[in-house]
Length: 401
Image (tube, rainbow, N blue to C red; front, side, top):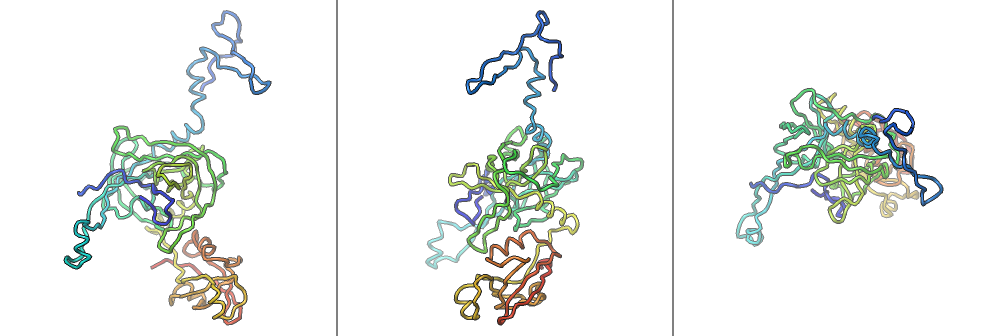
């Protein structure tokens, strides 16, 4: 599936449409020394052609334990910890389509316009975050679903219930009825380092393969707090994302991005690509955002989306002339809904926001970024100008109704 907001962003987004229309260590030897007759051979040492150091080969007959000890590195151990909790999500969706054979007749008015409903099958990934069956995935994976089938790494299948979906963050929470499920631990410290290892785990093929084990790719954390601009209000914003060069493949949407401690640091979401294949530019929703959503759902039964009740616009030269303003730094209040949080804070149409949270209100995107990770009950302090007077206020965020 492709996000609508940027032609260069392939979808993956990443719940790739794989189906079609249904229309339907040990250290080894003890330290006995390399004495003649003890059955061992000394390591073979050769000069390093790149410098004066030497390279030492493994001791022949050193044992499988040595090799396994070298192979079972932090990446392998982290994968072992998380992979059992990664699931495949089979999504049956309904889509409204037009009959191309009738479209011309409909345009000419010979037939009334009609839409037909067909069922399509898509797939994505998810990760179990509680032993009683809570699963995190991407909202775009499950959007419009009429049926959700979850396949565990051990092959068991469950019908899932959509507890809530949060389009703003592209997150969704599912539940399956089971107990004592494998759980992927969430990272509690938001201290990712650029350049540290990143492991992308997904289950893009689910029940299509006899082996339901997830797939693993490895890269590094390429960047933090990436904001992806959107071209219209209808497009989904992606702000504060984790960027990684770990290959994120079709169907891996909703799977975990993992650190070498075996902790989920993000939820794989989309890639940038012209070809549709991974080119090392993938993005994940940070774990801190996932924790906030899950905590809200556990406490209130749903995620409480915030409401400002205000529509903002750029402070254009014509608006400055009309309002007789001199300072171009600010954002225009274009409309305020009565009794909304912004209204209660005193904002009215044609007010100009000059500062928010102590920072100059330089653009709409700057304000959107401040609001993006705010929660119900948070307060946003601002200063505004009206009729040449500067005044201050505070908006207490409420739940969107």
